[in-house]
Image (cartoon, rainbow over all chains, first blue to last red; front, side, top):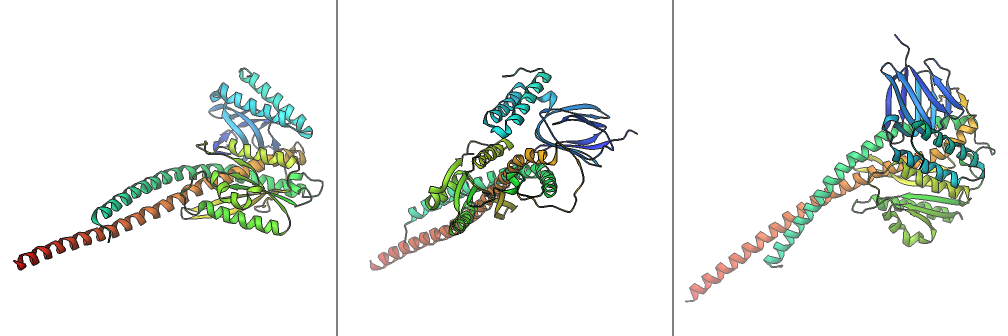
Length: 135
Length: 289
């Protein structure tokens, strides 16, 4: 019997996924992080990236932006503003994401500028990782 | 006494009104189900988010050095009211209840010598408040083209509110919407979003490792919290609107039914009276011969 943890992925509009996973790879703002059962309690913000969840049935990848992940004793809860299954993402979804981050970057004040630029760079990197073009 | 053809016309017109209100009621009930589902689906996110925010806010504290969105600007001179109403009418007291509440709140603030700015979401609220507080309007958000309210609509409103906050245009922001209790009960509600207030559900303050620091997370999440609260409010409002419309149209349909009954009785009586009259005329005519 493999140890599992409860994985929940929730977007503002609905609960995207909820199942038991064996490991969850989180694109944390301070770096990638793989959570396995009995992980220490962590709360981390997300950067735009790919969340990959391994379960007995295989690995599912989600593209997530904005939000946070909460690792508790019982499992992992990811709250993301956008959460799309990686294989379902289309160029137009990506364009929407890119343009919204571009707008954030353009509107960012001095205080937020670094964070916005980093987020935008993450999105561009994400696009490259997905093998899609940047509009 | 209206003549027979007038009565007949009126009955026909009330009947067609009833058909319309009945159809509207049915449409509203279908939309209500969808709106309720959406509100239900959005609940886990909002609950989890608020719980985490409450924990964070409690541990960082509302010291003066804290983030402005949480601790406030140190003043409460200028208030921003975000008023959410519907884009369409014919939904009973839904819009006027919200407008009434906003009117009271605005008058109270003005009496205290505070400045008030209003952003309206939804056409009906703007129309209801324009006469009294038209000079206080700073913006209007039009959602009439939006079929299903999505998170990006809320994020758009939140972005606007936040950029005004950054520009120092106001100190306190409050959103007004209608909370959905049941089909016949929607309660106008006000929620203060800036500075944010989080209710600590229970004393579960789990100790986490924070990445980045607690302050860093808070700074990242506070703007999202505003969007989340606005989104919840929009969803509640959507369900409330359909609920209110459904019960209003149900009433209207029933009233139309009553009216048709009354008019039909009147019509039958008049017709009978007319026949009796004619008979009397014929009989008395025959007797006179």
